[in-house]
Image (cartoon, rainbow, N blue to C red; front, side, top):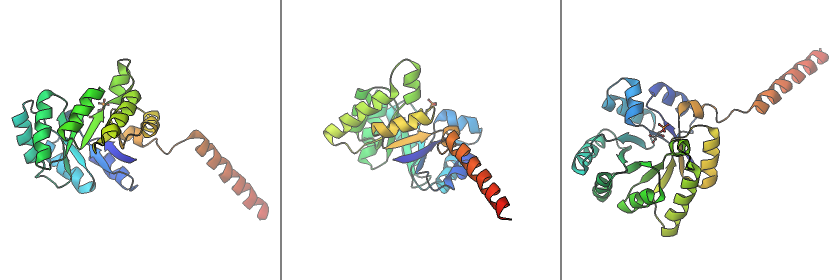
Length: 217
Ligand code: E4P
């Protein structure tokens, strides 16, 4: 399973990149706006830290404009993936971009038919939003399971990015459901390796070792 960071914060990206376990980054207009800096500058900085795919979202709503923005974004770095919203216009744009070998990540996926259409249009990635679907009483993980089955039924190469991750349980469930990638906020990523029993175990090893060393003196 691949891990992406779901943030535009360069400090967080630099911190976690040091682990060597970050395969890519996803951003969206909200995440970029939180940084209070120029979109192009932020994305270019991220592409210098992470060599894997970096998603940069278009803001246009018409297919022609989306395609124009996408063609411009991919000039910024070779690892840019253009994030396109799941709309009728978005699907038209994905079809054009895939014919030009421009990688796309279709975002705001909340149903199997949306995911299937995006895959058929040639999307490189689709992003089902787990947390936001759970919030309205749906099942984000159920959607990932269904998408996995449908993509496999027809041999689509489109990869599933489990997005809108709210906790470490989502990461575990996404892995079990067969998501190719989980895109994880920094606050959740920083908890992936923690367990209270690990901390407790380590503390007792340290204290037993200290007593043992004391006895040896
Ligand atoms: C990633 O591609 C999405 O934009 C992101 O995961 C959305 O997450 P949110 O629902 O926490 O805003």
